[in-house]
View 1 (cartoon, protein in one colour):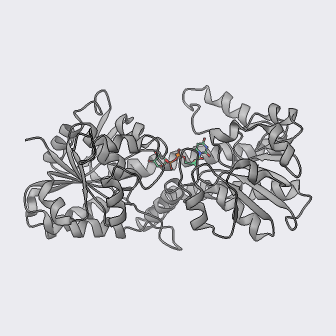
View 2 (cartoon, rainbow, N blue to C red; view 1 turned 90 degrees about the vertical axis):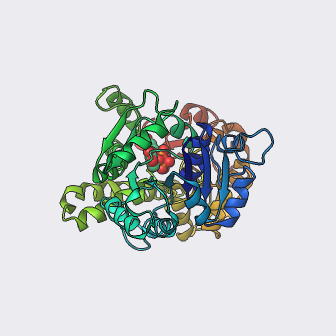
View 3 (cartoon, rainbow, N blue to C red; view 1 turned 180 degrees about the vertical axis):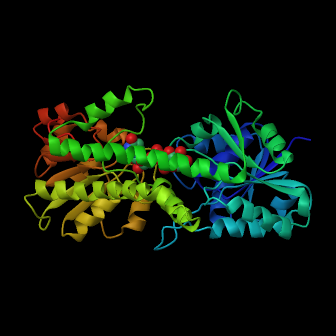
Length: 446
Ligand code: UDX
């Protein structure tokens, strides 16, 4: 009998994992506690913008014409418990309000609600990013609550997908990491990934704490790389150097590599910022806080990028925001996503508004989420409308649409032709040719 899989939590991670598993030939049942989400998914619609996901989903959701019918969704824990041989837990672990630590309540509640329905041998696989030590604790919880007791095993299998590339990253991962205690978990996960997904992909078997730490360490490294290049941007600005050329030159060294060296207004989103903070909090609990004090600096360099952009904008306006119109291009924390969680762009927009500026934001996909989070900012239906009458334009999320804008056309409607490129992504020469004063981050002369 082929393995039957369930996926608990249908956000970026869960919805993509469920669709990918159906694509690989498994029968999959997805669960979410949000009925509205389940209804949407059951029609093959995705509640967020994620390139390629809706196509992948509709190829498999039962009831959609021409679909494989291998993918269904439910809100019933009982149904999930009965159906699955393997249960992937994909719920989110946000930052606790007002604290660095990670909020484990969604994970804890998923495990507590699932366990009483595990009446036969099953493998529960955690995919969420959690503080090290969680897997061991959750394994105990499963054993005590599941009617099948010792026949229920736990594995930890962190996910490394990037938003905007969720489908590609899930179907073509760089590596598969599984944290296991006991051989059955490893054997079952090898079976799941013995598909095109796992072919030629490094398969790393570890204990629980190592598997949990791989994920947080990877995100801490990525955040550090970005803050490193942003620190170099600060030095370049002081010294008259160009951080983009510097990054390109150091990136040619194989040991450094060219990726994640784009200086700008820094990292945001639902993962990197909260993951490095949760990592510091957990290290503190373990008495290893000294090992991660550098992450405090990584975080503050990152936050400084946002205030630096605000300062550059104020400077461009002659020292004060009051009475000025500021166009903000970008609201999502990165392009190809509608996610505005901890978005550097919206943080900058919010700071400027607080200081008296009249801000108008435009983003290709993030408008609805931005409006919900920052209802008092001004919004425009197009980039051209946002720029109309603006005294300064801030480019804060590097969507392709913004790179393809015609600076001459924008120049005709702008109040003043002044643009600050917070992502070092626009063609400086093109903008200058159209009469704009162009300024980038860490590139005083570029
Ligand atoms: C990240 C990790 O990449 C992924 O492996 C993990 O599973 C989840 O966290 P994600 O948050 O989707 O993924 O976005 P990512 O592409 O990593 O970008 C994070 C932030 O860093 C964005 O705000 C982006 O604009 C910024 N960034 C990225 C830079 O400022 N400079 C860079 O060079 C790269």
